Image (tube, rainbow, N blue to C red; front, side, top):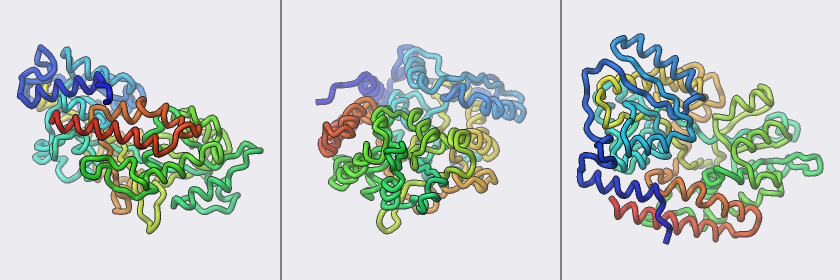
Length: 441
């Protein structure tokens, strides 16, 4: 039996409260209930969920919004990305939530379970965002909320998984771009020269390793659903075989130091050494450009398997949430609509090097002219990619997919645990977490 985590316990209590329509949900002062539309003017508070990193672009968007809406003032509060979940949980329990806040799908379900967010599907349908939000991202938001077809945030961007590769090393070795899994494995072997400290690939063995491993597994197996009935497909035989092949890269065509790599170390290693390939996302583009220079690297979407089929797991979708406790929802919604509209959404995503949720913004020149963004966006929208929706809605998902299994994955890399044993253990945790979530619903 999996030990009940504080997050699961909190979500269970709050979900029970929501389902019985208690006024206060998860706080004696009713901090997540009530609220009002207000007059559509006045002051609102906005929490940026990646404060510091995205502060300059948000200040630009807020200035444009206040110019267009001189009767509304936006108080900007930058929250560091590592603190945002705890800040929200504290405010939900004790009061002080903002009117609008940045919310990603990785912790959306926890906030929905605590009845903190206003449903926004109806507002989208009745306003200027109808029909202009990428369906792949709206589907991710719906699935992550765990409440059927209702949406609890407005998607603004996605950060697609990317296979970065050294074009200079590939050209020197006479290799074509690694667009298929077979080409990926062949290139990893050919580019490895341990005596000269050259490696074909760098694998993520430290913090954040599980998501990358899942992406490689499902990408190779071709399985497109995370669940088969009541049980997860994580430990399906095809996924076990895929993980065995993937972890077989460690120490053979990767540095042995990779067992402790988080994304910072992994990216630095790729940028400062002779490593042929790296699996990360669009966010590391500027790092590669600064270290390697234009023309020495390129990015591709997930490699394809037999028959040209591309499968990848869902990446967290960033968005904006409207809080139930807001006393000025009318003005807050105007800000959300403005930020998710064509011009502002394009401005934000160009600065962040991410994929716009607004389909009009996705057609802007900076997207078309950038091969890295255009390829990533096309892979999600041109019908070539099937997305395995990860169960962000499970209260235990963050623990299971991060700290709960990262040490075990390191054992797999080191040969101290089999891939099957590792995936069977994770499957047991996931099946139990889903059963408990179903019971709570």
